[in-house]
Length: 142
Length: 142
DNA sequence: AAGTTACTAGTAATCATTACTATCTCTAGA
DNA sequence: TCTAGAGATAGTAATGATTACTAGTAACTT
Ligand SMILES: [Mn+2]
Ligand SMILES: [Mn+2]
Ligand SMILES: [Zn+2]
Ligand SMILES: [Zn+2]
Picture 1: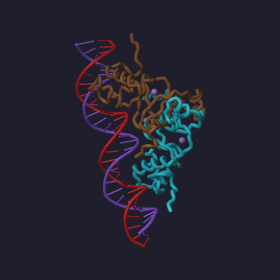
Picture 2 (picture 1 turned 120 degrees about the vertical axis):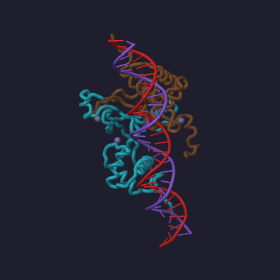
Picture 3 (picture 1 turned 90 degrees about the vertical axis):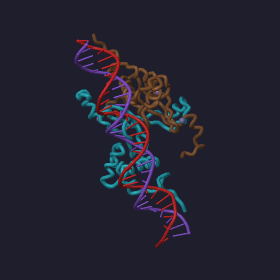
Picture 4 (picture 1 turned 180 degrees about the vertical axis):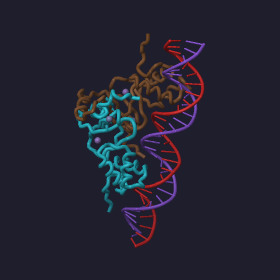
């Protein structure tokens, strides 16, 4: 009897995959792949960068983590999977959750305006985190 | 007597810069740098990729065009500078304007929730364009 | 146990972007 | 008008992030 326990495209929960998922969950914030790599290496010194990328991809594909594709620079990952938005500091790059709500009919409005079959949306706020904000103006930007 | 006619950081309107701006404006859609490069080369066969990147950056910095940093893949540019949102086709990558409105207090709400000094936000819808939507399901995705 | 598939480490390759360098061009005085 | 910068350019090298490839290992199926 065959039964599919793990999501599509993820046949096995390997040690590497498990540690990568753990690392992301414990990190608290929204690390990029190479930050996850650093964390994972503490447990698995021989892990390869490719394995980290591949598994972050696989986990995201399976809906167990979220990819954050917005903004410039490297991609970031999020252990939180329920929809929520983020704010990014233009100075230091920090990414934090932003618990604001959007009107529910938004995607429907987009479908009506564009004729696209709308799957969803991505939203990111940008600004300066408290720490950086207090220094803006004091520091000369280059 | 010194007088600054052009926006900060853009001292001169060179032929290359002008053609790049023209190309973006005439393109209608939301090209990436290397699409702009193709278009510009029709007028200036000897233009270099670096010039295209540098000037798109400069023009954006000067507020004459908009950079679209959303989603995966290369950066895109937009001759339209008033705030509006976009939708991206997950199949073919096409980017179109989406004329929906967001509640006005949104950035303020984000500031209150996060303590960040909020500069603005970026929003992108994702889905399937009419052309691609009608083929989804018919085609085997690899 | 054997065959099959998923996965991994290590490395090479690719893609998008930025940096560097020598040369050119414009412009503001002298 | 001449000239010294500053600004810009073409061409190329370098970088950063990600993906692809390869040969070997581990796990599942029968
Ligand atoms: Mn989050
Ligand atoms: Mn637009
Ligand atoms: Zn900051
Ligand atoms: Zn499409």
